[in-house]
Length: 567
Image 1 (spheres, helix red, strand yellow):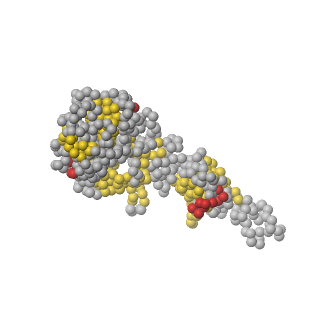
Image 2: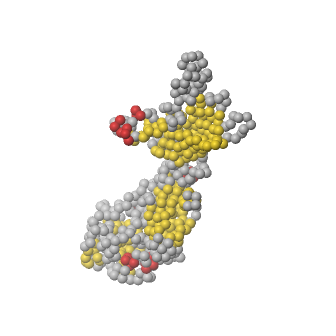
Image 3: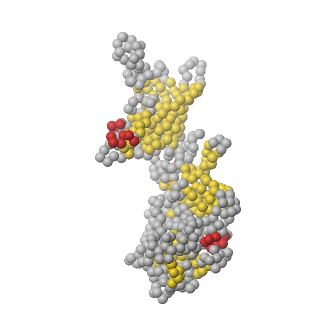
């Protein structure tokens, strides 16, 4: 089965199997990407290429501005539901459903972008004696394939060039034999005019090499998603994408073959972004996470070089990747991008997976505990500080978009009041939408005085955040004030208290020393984005004539990225 485009007269015909197709194959381009420059070797006349990555960031006029030999580009639009086709002399022309076209200098081109994981026919000036190298920067995409049941498959595959040679079709499709069965016709484009010699039928799959940059016609009438002898499933369909706050991404490797496969996974840097595209700050600081059953904990190791994973025959393994956000420099939202390259001991495939992340700000609502385990002793001759047991103090911290932190005694999360209610964070119930109060959440730090919003300074990794918690001598939350206790009469028989007699002003100078990287016991994955930790110090005054210092550690986890606090 062959379908061939032409902008020439009908006399330049080719016997083909023609599919009357509708629709088009479109892939949504991501707003950011890691890049690979792919070079295609083309001849004069008609060639086929396959884009494993996406090049929709620019128009075809821009992409081929310096490649003047490229005159036309035709995209094949498969229709998996169409089943009727006949052998005929018909050659599709521009405007038919199965082809979308671009002609240099044309005024009514229907093809305006090069989408990823898609096959194209490219016409160049000259004859087969002319050769051209055309480089197309592309955004790396996870692999995919969709075999349609009518046999109209113009497809490419991520084969590996090893020792200067690609694998044979026979070895590559050994685990998907329906693609190359004896009754299947396969064609490839070799340049020159369309005719009996272009495209050319492949008769020996045991010797024909599978070029990863070329698209081939397969009239295999089979439904499937085969693209390589391995199947990759990601918890995030767009790739290993951590976004601004993500911590882990899971990848499942399925070995389609009946033999053991040793998969090599290697980190690869991105090429430079094309002009006009977002610059990449650096490669994503990836980490490998493995679960230790002996300790029931995750072990994390930095991925700085290739590692291998053994996958049994017709079996699957699951890999978990994390990110070391503390190693990410640059301003908020700085873009990090790189790739993972997967190859196997069979030397059949080379798959590139996109890896992306953005540096997160610390803006939002953080909730956690200070775990106090040290109390300064005032007993003569005793220098120890360790307590028999630790005790927890809940803390609620909000960080605005400018990085300013506030320590809160209570907070509400829900729909805010107003003409256009929206999800928000506030410190008073009155700021909530009355109609939506039932779905709002209230969080309280019981050890703090009521209704306090305390300036905490600036929250930053490697820095410190501090505040002073003051409790006046007559505050209802003062430990010296007991409304119904007869001793609190200010030594005068009256109920009016005075500072410094039977009740005292209390002060708690609290400091959070935030670790620049994950401290012991805190996973590096997600640190600096979803979790921060460090050392906690509190100096208490007013409880006795001299101050008392308590120490411990703290851990805060982000529960919201909303950087506006309504008071």
